[in-house]
Each structure stands twice: as structure tokens, then as C-alpha cells.
Length: 416
Image 1 (cartoon, rainbow, N blue to C red):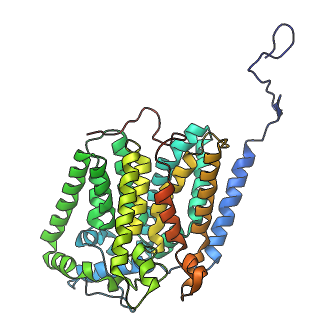
Image 2 (cartoon, rainbow, N blue to C red; image 1 turned 90 degrees about the vertical axis):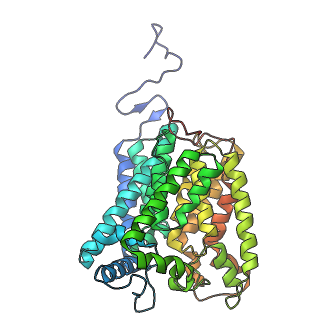
Image 3 (tube, rainbow, N blue to C red; image 1 turned 60 degrees about the horizontal axis):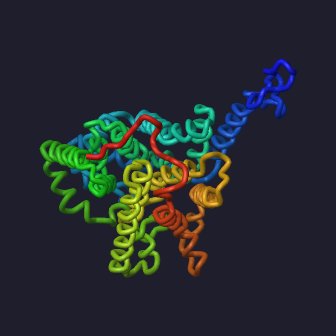
């Protein structure tokens, strides 16, 4: 557009089919082709590189629940290498429909549910970032899905046939509900905690941030689900809470490099006699840091949920590599605080670099190099690399100041 004098009007740009006044336009199909190419490369790499887990965990679920449905004892069934069902009886009730299927259809259902859960999580967490940055939303989602698929915890979750992303989706339904002041907020956390105990840490988050109604809803939901399981399967419930829950040997060796929790670190320092007092001190320190940081982040549910997921990974006695999908929301928070893009402020650039390094480590599979043990500093840092990323996120995730990384405009959080 020009004035009557022929000069461009201030604040406008002449646009043509081939470019702008500032230079030629980028054809809209190029980013799409780049994403398709990236997705193809990633898919081929995942398919041909080592690291496939043979659907081991869904094999445990499938075998144990079928054995139980046929009249056997749920917690007596074990695999050839002595791994058994480790979740509460309510989880077995939830898995009954899948366990009723033959083996390959059960895998297909697990994969389909995992893809749906991953899509929900990425849309919920990435879409607000794309909106604020002005990025094309579906291209951003597609790129985020590619980057998500490369992460070692995500690859292991899929190839083990694990339920991590399904549990995350249940928990993050409550994020969605809290941002809308919905009365049902807490139901997702309660169901997730009834299926597996680790998500119960989010009840603590609701209490610390004074979401009393949501905390009560989560607690009541978990209690009711557990009571339903106790009514249906009293023997299994008694066995779980008196025996199986306390037998960490059922899930593997604490010192194994895949255990990227604080107890795993302590166990690797002295596999024969892990120092439980040291572990309790580290857990107390993690809880103190988490409490201070979520209090500072009060009102920003996305940061609070990210910090709580990190805490769950650190303080759980066993956090296998595939459990570290709970770190993904923290990585997305780090991207959000670097906006506007590209980051101009030094602090935003440092956060971006830290996020890139953490992401690269979580993609690398570096911990597996030390699967058979290795001494010295390189063994310590390499064998605990994912845990160190988690600890860094707990300490360094921004909880105030910087770019806004909250829910889309128009949403608010529950204050009572």
C-alpha cells in the first residue's frame, strides 16, 4: 500500500506472490516438507537402532492379569526372569479388558492408547506456547511430536508397552480442569494414584498450593477406587499392601543403571549396603527445594505440575528410564520462558541452552554405556546423567519472572 506521493506508508509492507519488501517469502510448503523428512528419519532410526524392549512390561500386565482372571493369585505370577505384577489391584481391574485380548491385539491397543495420550499431552502443553509465539500451531505440534519421539524415556515407554504416558494424561487432565476452575479437578490424579502410587505426589502439590477441593477430590477418588478393588479382590489387596508393595526386589535391582532415582544413585555408590540415611537426607532436600519452588510458582499450574513430576522421579525408590517422561513438561516450560523468539535477554538464552543440553542428554541413551558399571567420575556422571538432569530441573526451572508460560488467555486457576 502506498500514499498518494508513491512512498510506502509507515508500518506496512508491500506483499506480492513472490516475496515482501524485506525479501523473498519462504514457500509455505517447505516447513511441511522439512517436518515430514524429519519424521521419516526419526521413524527409520527408531526402527533400526538398538534399544527395543520386546513389549516386556505389557507382557507382564497381560500374563499376570490373565492368570488372575483365570483363578490364580495376581502377585504370584512371574516371568521367566522373576518379574511380576507390581501395581495395586485396581490397576489389574482397569487392565482386564486388554488382558482378555490375544497377545498382538493387546499390543495394538496399548500402542493406540499411548498415541492418544501423547497427542493430548503435547496439544495441552505445546499449543499455548505456539499461540504466544505466533508459530503455526499444527506445524509446531508436528515438530514437537518429532522431538518427543526421540527422547529415550519415550522410546522405552513405547517399546516396553508401559503405561507412563497414560498416567501422565490422567494427571494432566486435572491441569486442564484446574485452569478452568472445574469442580471435577482432582479426579484424574486420584485415578492415576489408584493405578500406580507414584502420581499420589500430585495430591501433595494440591495441598501445598491450597487447592483444597481438588486435593479432597483426588484423595476421595483414589480411596474409592482402592475400596472397589478391595471389594472385588480382597486377597490381592491384602497381598499388595502387606507384601508386594514393600518388596522392591520384584521390580529389579535398585543399583541397576536404569533406576535414575535418588535411591538408585545411593545404591550404585555401594550396591551391597546402600546408605538409607543418605537417601533419606537427599529425599528431604528434594522435598524442601520442591516445596519452596512450588510455593513461589503459586498460580502457575504448569510450572507447579512440571516441578512435581520431577520430584516424583527423584524421590520414588525406583524410577526406571521410561518413568522419566515426567520430565517432558519441564522441558516445554523452559521453551516457554524463552519467548519472545529468538530470546534477546541473556537469562532467557541461558535457560534455552540449559534446556537444549538437558534434552540432548535425555535423547542420548548415555546411561546405558554404564549398564555394567564403571568407576571414577565419568562413571558417576554418565551412569546418573538422567538423574542429574532431573535434579537440575528441580533447582533451575523458572518459577517467577521472565516470559509468561501460563495457560492461554482467558483461563484462570482455582484458588480455593
